[in-house]
Image (tube, rainbow, N blue to C red; front, side):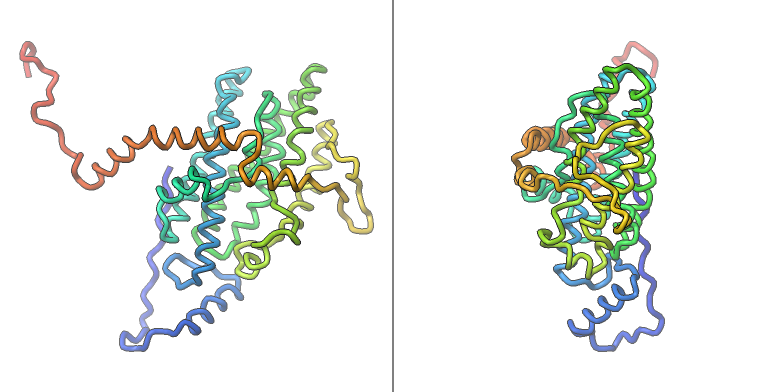
Amino acid sequence: MSVVAEPEPEADPEADPKAEPESEAQLEARFQAVIARKDRIEPRDWMPDAYRRTLVRQVAQHAHSEIIGMQPEGSWISRAPSLRRKAILLAKVQDEAGHGLYLYSAAETLGVSRQELTEMLISGRQKYSSIFNYPTLSYADMGTIGWLVDGAAICNQVPLCRTSFGPYGRAMIRICKEESFHQRQGYELLATMMRGTDEQRAMVQESVDRFWWPSLMMFGPPDDASPNTAQSMAWGVKTHTNDELRQRFVDMTVPQAAALGVTLPDPDLVWNAERGAHDFGQPDWDELWAVVKGNGPCNTQRVAHRKRAWDEGAWVREAALAFANGTGTGTDDNDNDNDGTEPA
Protein backbone atom coordinates (compact mmCIF):
# COMPACT_ATOMS: atom_id res chain seq x y z
CA MET A 1 0.00 0.00 0.00
CA SER A 2 1.09 3.57 -0.54
CA VAL A 3 0.56 6.77 1.36
CA VAL A 4 -0.23 10.03 -0.38
CA ALA A 5 2.76 12.35 -0.22
CA GLU A 6 2.51 15.31 2.08
CA PRO A 7 1.72 18.56 0.19
CA GLU A 8 4.54 21.03 -0.31
CA PRO A 9 4.07 24.16 1.81
CA GLU A 10 2.96 27.15 -0.23
CA ALA A 11 5.41 30.01 -0.51
CA ASP A 12 4.39 33.16 1.34
CA PRO A 13 4.27 35.91 -1.32
CA GLU A 14 4.60 38.56 1.40
CA ALA A 15 7.66 37.00 3.03
CA ASP A 16 10.69 39.28 3.08
CA PRO A 17 13.83 37.29 2.15
CA LYS A 18 15.95 39.87 4.00
CA ALA A 19 13.94 39.65 7.22
CA GLU A 20 15.68 38.53 10.37
CA PRO A 21 14.96 34.89 11.31
CA GLU A 22 12.43 34.46 14.07
CA SER A 23 13.70 33.97 17.57
CA GLU A 24 13.06 30.81 19.59
CA ALA A 25 10.41 32.66 21.57
CA GLN A 26 8.63 33.80 18.39
CA LEU A 27 8.69 30.29 16.95
CA GLU A 28 7.30 28.90 20.19
CA ALA A 29 4.56 31.53 20.20
CA ARG A 30 3.63 30.68 16.60
CA PHE A 31 3.51 26.97 17.48
CA GLN A 32 1.33 27.59 20.54
CA ALA A 33 -1.03 29.75 18.47
CA VAL A 34 -1.56 26.87 16.02
CA ILE A 35 -2.28 24.51 18.91
CA ALA A 36 -4.65 27.01 20.56
CA ARG A 37 -6.81 27.32 17.46
CA LYS A 38 -6.80 23.52 17.04
CA ASP A 39 -5.06 23.70 13.71
CA ARG A 40 -2.47 21.25 12.35
CA ILE A 41 1.28 21.20 12.78
CA GLU A 42 2.89 20.00 9.55
CA PRO A 43 6.29 18.29 9.16
CA ARG A 44 8.13 21.39 7.90
CA ASP A 45 6.69 23.63 10.59
CA TRP A 46 8.84 24.52 13.57
CA MET A 47 8.02 22.39 16.62
CA PRO A 48 9.59 21.95 20.07
CA ASP A 49 11.99 19.04 20.34
CA ALA A 50 9.89 17.55 23.14
CA TYR A 51 6.79 17.64 20.89
CA ARG A 52 8.71 15.85 18.15
CA ARG A 53 10.00 13.21 20.58
CA THR A 54 6.52 12.63 21.96
CA LEU A 55 5.12 12.11 18.48
CA VAL A 56 7.92 9.76 17.47
CA ARG A 57 7.25 7.68 20.58
CA GLN A 58 3.46 7.60 20.13
CA VAL A 59 3.28 7.13 16.36
CA ALA A 60 6.03 4.50 16.38
CA GLN A 61 4.34 2.60 19.21
CA HIS A 62 1.10 2.68 17.23
CA ALA A 63 2.85 1.44 14.06
CA HIS A 64 4.64 -1.33 15.97
CA SER A 65 1.31 -2.40 17.47
CA GLU A 66 -0.27 -2.81 14.05
CA ILE A 67 2.63 -4.98 12.83
CA ILE A 68 3.00 -7.06 16.01
CA GLY A 69 -0.80 -7.36 16.13
CA MET A 70 -0.73 -9.41 12.94
CA GLN A 71 0.87 -12.31 14.82
CA PRO A 72 -1.90 -13.51 17.18
CA GLU A 73 -4.50 -13.48 14.40
CA GLY A 74 -2.17 -14.68 11.66
CA SER A 75 -1.55 -17.87 13.61
CA TRP A 76 -5.20 -18.86 13.04
CA ILE A 77 -5.39 -18.30 9.27
CA SER A 78 -4.50 -21.90 8.44
CA ARG A 79 -6.93 -23.15 11.12
CA ALA A 80 -9.98 -21.07 10.22
CA PRO A 81 -13.07 -23.33 10.04
CA SER A 82 -14.17 -22.34 6.52
CA LEU A 83 -12.90 -20.72 3.36
CA ARG A 84 -15.05 -17.66 4.09
CA ARG A 85 -13.57 -17.23 7.56
CA LYS A 86 -10.08 -17.76 6.19
CA ALA A 87 -10.59 -15.05 3.56
CA ILE A 88 -11.94 -12.64 6.20
CA LEU A 89 -8.98 -13.23 8.49
CA LEU A 90 -6.49 -12.87 5.63
CA ALA A 91 -8.04 -9.56 4.63
CA LYS A 92 -7.96 -8.30 8.22
CA VAL A 93 -4.30 -9.19 8.77
CA GLN A 94 -3.47 -7.50 5.46
CA ASP A 95 -5.28 -4.38 6.64
CA GLU A 96 -3.17 -4.30 9.79
CA ALA A 97 -0.01 -4.42 7.69
CA GLY A 98 -1.28 -1.45 5.73
CA HIS A 99 -2.02 0.47 8.93
CA GLY A 100 1.53 -0.11 10.06
CA LEU A 101 2.85 1.25 6.77
CA TYR A 102 0.70 4.39 7.00
CA LEU A 103 1.95 5.05 10.50
CA TYR A 104 5.61 4.37 9.78
CA SER A 105 5.30 6.84 6.90
CA ALA A 106 3.80 9.43 9.25
CA ALA A 107 6.67 8.85 11.72
CA GLU A 108 9.25 9.26 8.95
CA THR A 109 8.03 12.84 8.36
CA LEU A 110 9.44 13.57 11.83
CA GLY A 111 12.96 12.77 10.69
CA VAL A 112 13.30 9.17 11.89
CA SER A 113 13.71 6.23 9.51
CA ARG A 114 11.68 3.04 9.48
CA GLN A 115 14.88 1.07 10.01
CA GLU A 116 15.68 3.05 13.15
CA LEU A 117 12.17 2.48 14.50
CA THR A 118 12.26 -1.26 13.83
CA GLU A 119 15.68 -1.61 15.42
CA MET A 120 14.45 0.24 18.51
CA LEU A 121 11.47 -2.12 18.69
CA ILE A 122 13.46 -5.35 18.48
CA SER A 123 16.07 -4.03 20.94
CA GLY A 124 13.37 -3.20 23.50
CA ARG A 125 13.81 0.58 23.35
CA GLN A 126 10.30 1.11 21.97
CA LYS A 127 7.04 -0.56 22.95
CA TYR A 128 3.82 -1.76 21.37
CA SER A 129 0.33 -2.28 22.79
CA SER A 130 0.26 -4.61 25.79
CA ILE A 131 -2.79 -6.47 24.43
CA PHE A 132 -0.72 -8.31 21.82
CA ASN A 133 1.33 -10.04 24.50
CA TYR A 134 -1.61 -12.33 25.33
CA PRO A 135 -2.06 -15.66 23.52
CA THR A 136 -4.94 -16.58 21.23
CA LEU A 137 -5.99 -19.96 22.60
CA SER A 138 -9.18 -20.61 20.61
CA TYR A 139 -10.81 -19.57 17.37
CA ALA A 140 -13.35 -17.58 19.40
CA ASP A 141 -10.46 -15.23 20.17
CA MET A 142 -10.61 -14.04 16.54
CA GLY A 143 -14.09 -12.70 17.22
CA THR A 144 -13.22 -11.36 20.68
CA ILE A 145 -10.19 -9.49 19.35
CA GLY A 146 -12.39 -7.93 16.67
CA TRP A 147 -15.14 -6.99 19.10
CA LEU A 148 -13.20 -5.96 22.23
CA VAL A 149 -9.65 -5.19 21.11
CA ASP A 150 -10.59 -3.40 17.89
CA GLY A 151 -13.52 -1.80 19.73
CA ALA A 152 -11.10 -0.39 22.30
CA ALA A 153 -8.80 0.73 19.48
CA ILE A 154 -11.68 2.61 17.84
CA CYS A 155 -12.46 4.47 21.08
CA ASN A 156 -8.81 5.35 21.41
CA GLN A 157 -8.12 6.24 17.79
CA VAL A 158 -11.15 8.12 16.49
CA PRO A 159 -10.15 11.22 18.53
CA LEU A 160 -6.68 10.95 16.97
CA CYS A 161 -8.20 11.91 13.62
CA ARG A 162 -8.19 15.41 15.14
CA THR A 163 -4.71 15.22 16.64
CA SER A 164 -2.51 18.28 16.22
CA PHE A 165 0.10 16.61 13.96
CA GLY A 166 -1.19 16.59 10.40
CA PRO A 167 0.27 13.36 8.95
CA TYR A 168 -0.81 11.34 11.99
CA GLY A 169 -4.36 12.67 11.93
CA ARG A 170 -4.77 12.05 8.20
CA ALA A 171 -3.44 8.51 8.46
CA MET A 172 -5.93 7.81 11.25
CA ILE A 173 -8.97 8.63 9.11
CA ARG A 174 -8.59 5.58 6.88
CA ILE A 175 -7.31 3.39 9.71
CA CYS A 176 -10.39 4.11 11.82
CA LYS A 177 -12.74 3.28 8.94
CA GLU A 178 -11.09 -0.10 8.51
CA GLU A 179 -10.94 -0.76 12.26
CA SER A 180 -14.68 -0.12 12.46
CA PHE A 181 -15.21 -2.81 9.85
CA HIS A 182 -12.96 -5.18 11.83
CA GLN A 183 -15.00 -4.55 14.97
CA ARG A 184 -18.27 -5.38 13.19
CA GLN A 185 -16.71 -8.51 11.69
CA GLY A 186 -15.59 -9.71 15.13
CA TYR A 187 -19.02 -9.08 16.60
CA GLU A 188 -20.66 -10.96 13.74
CA LEU A 189 -18.39 -13.98 14.32
CA LEU A 190 -19.24 -14.07 18.03
CA ALA A 191 -22.97 -13.66 17.32
CA THR A 192 -22.78 -16.63 14.94
CA MET A 193 -21.02 -18.77 17.53
CA MET A 194 -23.53 -17.76 20.23
CA ARG A 195 -26.29 -19.19 18.00
CA GLY A 196 -24.40 -22.47 17.82
CA THR A 197 -23.78 -25.30 20.26
CA ASP A 198 -23.32 -25.15 24.01
CA GLU A 199 -19.61 -25.79 23.44
CA GLN A 200 -19.36 -22.81 21.08
CA ARG A 201 -21.15 -20.52 23.52
CA ALA A 202 -18.85 -21.65 26.31
CA MET A 203 -15.84 -20.98 24.05
CA VAL A 204 -17.03 -17.42 23.43
CA GLN A 205 -17.60 -16.74 27.14
CA GLU A 206 -14.18 -18.12 28.07
CA SER A 207 -12.56 -15.92 25.44
CA VAL A 208 -14.38 -12.81 26.67
CA ASP A 209 -13.33 -13.63 30.24
CA ARG A 210 -9.65 -13.66 29.18
CA PHE A 211 -9.68 -10.54 27.02
CA TRP A 212 -11.92 -8.18 29.00
CA TRP A 213 -9.37 -6.90 31.49
CA PRO A 214 -6.45 -6.67 29.01
CA SER A 215 -8.79 -4.67 26.73
CA LEU A 216 -9.37 -2.14 29.50
CA MET A 217 -5.61 -1.92 30.00
CA MET A 218 -5.19 -0.86 26.34
CA PHE A 219 -6.09 2.70 27.30
CA GLY A 220 -3.04 2.94 29.51
CA PRO A 221 -2.69 3.50 33.25
CA PRO A 222 -5.11 5.66 35.27
CA ASP A 223 -4.78 9.37 34.65
CA ASP A 224 -3.06 9.96 37.99
CA ALA A 225 -0.38 7.40 37.06
CA SER A 226 0.11 8.46 33.43
CA PRO A 227 3.29 10.55 33.04
CA ASN A 228 2.60 11.72 29.48
CA THR A 229 -1.13 12.51 29.38
CA ALA A 230 -1.09 16.09 30.66
CA GLN A 231 1.53 17.34 28.21
CA SER A 232 0.05 15.40 25.30
CA MET A 233 -3.33 16.98 26.05
CA ALA A 234 -1.77 20.45 26.23
CA TRP A 235 -0.19 19.94 22.79
CA GLY A 236 -3.35 18.51 21.26
CA VAL A 237 -1.63 15.19 20.53
CA LYS A 238 -4.33 13.58 22.67
CA THR A 239 -7.80 15.04 23.05
CA HIS A 240 -9.13 12.74 25.81
CA THR A 241 -7.55 11.22 28.90
CA ASN A 242 -7.02 7.49 29.42
CA ASP A 243 -9.83 7.26 31.96
CA GLU A 244 -12.28 9.17 29.76
CA LEU A 245 -11.66 6.79 26.87
CA ARG A 246 -11.87 3.72 29.11
CA GLN A 247 -15.26 4.92 30.42
CA ARG A 248 -16.49 5.47 26.88
CA PHE A 249 -15.45 1.94 25.92
CA VAL A 250 -17.22 0.33 28.89
CA ASP A 251 -20.43 2.26 28.23
CA MET A 252 -20.33 1.25 24.55
CA THR A 253 -19.60 -2.42 25.24
CA VAL A 254 -22.12 -3.26 27.98
CA PRO A 255 -25.23 -3.19 25.74
CA GLN A 256 -23.37 -5.08 23.01
CA ALA A 257 -22.49 -7.81 25.51
CA ALA A 258 -26.13 -8.05 26.55
CA ALA A 259 -27.20 -8.40 22.92
CA LEU A 260 -24.62 -11.15 22.39
CA GLY A 261 -25.64 -12.98 25.54
CA VAL A 262 -22.21 -12.94 27.19
CA THR A 263 -21.32 -11.81 30.70
CA LEU A 264 -18.53 -9.32 31.25
CA PRO A 265 -16.35 -10.68 34.10
CA ASP A 266 -16.62 -7.71 36.45
CA PRO A 267 -18.74 -8.03 39.62
CA ASP A 268 -18.49 -4.26 40.15
CA LEU A 269 -20.00 -3.42 36.75
CA VAL A 270 -23.26 -1.54 37.35
CA TRP A 271 -25.14 1.39 35.86
CA ASN A 272 -24.82 4.62 37.87
CA ALA A 273 -27.87 6.74 37.12
CA GLU A 274 -26.45 9.74 38.92
CA ARG A 275 -23.34 9.80 36.70
CA GLY A 276 -25.17 8.59 33.60
CA ALA A 277 -22.42 6.01 33.10
CA HIS A 278 -21.33 2.60 34.30
CA ASP A 279 -19.27 2.02 37.41
CA PHE A 280 -16.75 -0.74 36.90
CA GLY A 281 -13.81 -2.44 38.60
CA GLN A 282 -10.18 -1.67 38.00
CA PRO A 283 -7.80 -3.93 36.08
CA ASP A 284 -4.75 -5.41 37.75
CA TRP A 285 -2.35 -2.55 37.13
CA ASP A 286 0.60 -4.60 38.39
CA GLU A 287 -0.11 -7.01 35.56
CA LEU A 288 -0.10 -4.15 33.05
CA TRP A 289 3.28 -2.88 34.22
CA ALA A 290 4.71 -6.40 34.16
CA VAL A 291 3.60 -6.83 30.54
CA VAL A 292 4.89 -3.39 29.56
CA LYS A 293 8.27 -4.26 31.07
CA GLY A 294 8.49 -7.38 28.91
CA ASN A 295 7.20 -10.00 31.33
CA GLY A 296 3.86 -10.83 29.69
CA PRO A 297 2.84 -14.27 28.43
CA CYS A 298 4.04 -13.67 24.85
CA ASN A 299 6.50 -10.71 24.92
CA THR A 300 9.56 -12.78 24.08
CA GLN A 301 7.76 -14.73 21.37
CA ARG A 302 6.33 -11.62 19.67
CA VAL A 303 9.61 -9.71 19.52
CA ALA A 304 11.61 -12.78 18.46
CA HIS A 305 9.18 -13.39 15.59
CA ARG A 306 9.44 -9.75 14.50
CA LYS A 307 13.25 -9.86 14.66
CA ARG A 308 13.35 -13.06 12.61
CA ALA A 309 11.13 -11.53 9.94
CA TRP A 310 13.29 -8.37 9.91
CA ASP A 311 16.52 -10.36 9.55
CA GLU A 312 15.12 -12.65 6.86
CA GLY A 313 13.85 -9.66 4.88
CA ALA A 314 17.24 -7.93 4.77
CA TRP A 315 17.97 -9.12 1.22
CA VAL A 316 14.70 -7.63 -0.02
CA ARG A 317 15.52 -4.24 1.49
CA GLU A 318 19.05 -4.39 0.05
CA ALA A 319 17.73 -5.26 -3.42
CA ALA A 320 15.14 -2.48 -3.30
CA LEU A 321 17.79 0.02 -2.21
CA ALA A 322 20.13 -1.10 -5.01
CA PHE A 323 17.32 -0.68 -7.51
CA ALA A 324 16.45 2.77 -6.16
CA ASN A 325 20.11 3.80 -6.40
CA GLY A 326 20.33 2.61 -9.99
CA THR A 327 22.77 -0.21 -9.26
CA GLY A 328 20.33 -3.02 -9.86
CA THR A 329 18.23 -1.83 -12.77
CA GLY A 330 19.94 -3.60 -15.66
CA THR A 331 20.15 -7.19 -16.78
CA ASP A 332 23.25 -9.14 -17.66
CA ASP A 333 23.69 -9.40 -21.43
CA ASN A 334 24.78 -12.99 -20.94
CA ASP A 335 21.72 -13.85 -18.85
CA ASN A 336 19.87 -15.75 -21.55
CA ASP A 337 18.11 -19.04 -21.16
CA ASN A 338 18.62 -19.85 -24.83
CA ASP A 339 21.37 -22.48 -25.06
CA GLY A 340 21.68 -22.13 -28.82
CA THR A 341 19.40 -24.99 -29.75
CA GLU A 342 16.37 -22.75 -30.19
CA PRO A 343 15.99 -19.77 -32.54
CA ALA A 344 16.53 -16.44 -30.88
